[in-house]
Image (cartoon, rainbow, N blue to C red; front, side):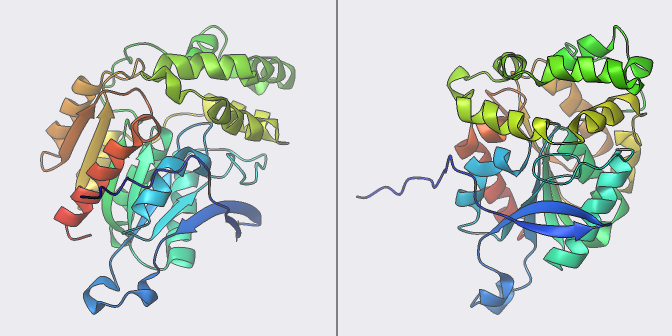
Length: 308
């Protein structure tokens, strides 16, 4: 008996650019388009839109896109300010990314989607699902960020937050101060050290991964994006957003995440959205990259279960 191995690729797929508000936005698309599907019942099934976390890009989904695109039409996008997308001197916020994602769904994908986001990307996806239910068929949150009304501090501040807690907003808004801080956190050694803390499986922290996070940090405008993200106020509370949401919700947690107490945070989500489905994995902050086969299977089965 022949066993088919999951199609997990370690190489990112080539992408394209879309102009949004005068800026270039990078995205990747893979899978069978709805017009190519033979069965009429499948022609209008939603696409799957993948949204990276802070400092990452479409490259961070390279282990997921190939396998998931065998069954679904898959899109991944670089949020404005990250990856290969433009990095203008704007004020960055969840509201800005919410509008970017919604416009991408309506103008490029042109049908409802299942949003899947990790960390900051999860919070941005939640904002879209809450404010634009007509564009959202489902939501998948992977170690999602975002404040609750009664927010408590995370298990351990991430390395950047530790640095910021000593100086914070005024320092970031000073060009000289921001430049010095950015050069410190931009170093490959700092990136590798941070990844080593948030990945349970150290073999997943590869030179390729470090390079993929480092490369866009060298782009013009990247230091200003960093300053804007960390010096602006947090967005709408997660519990408020959940109160507006109507679609199915899948939550995937890496229990080894030192920045998030996954069980306690999962309990909060259940309290406000009890109909969700959740899974806890032996992984850190980025389980889609660390244990991709498990995450791919969970996404696949959940979408099938909900006829998405």
